[in-house]
Length: 156
Image (tube, rainbow, N blue to C red; front, side, top):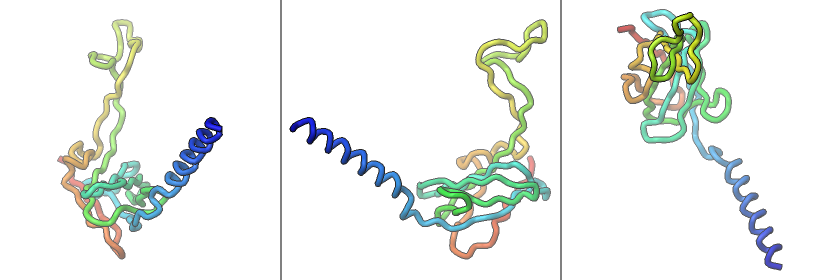
């Protein structure tokens, strides 16, 4: 008898967990957001855009196309961002090489790749200060009926 009660308790907890997880975000109000990213007036293709709610909550992300346009996604494709003030980060880097973790060059004396853990060396296409919501000067007020968001970035 005890094992049957224990089994039903475990099954009940699993069912409750599944129901709670399937409802996650169900009450989350999101507002569709689209916009463009330009660097020195030129569209930026392949940049990652992140909107992080200033009051906390799920961030929204998008990737720019060839025209610099993006559409934000939080839970489902194109569903938007959390309303209110959002800190904005924009990142685009180019991998320019790799090197051993904590080491100097990626090649030994014969020009062969060094063994062990490697880290990528990157060049920031969009200035590095924009890559993190703590250092980026960009903020956007997300609200119903908003126009497309122009994220006009100037290089340093």
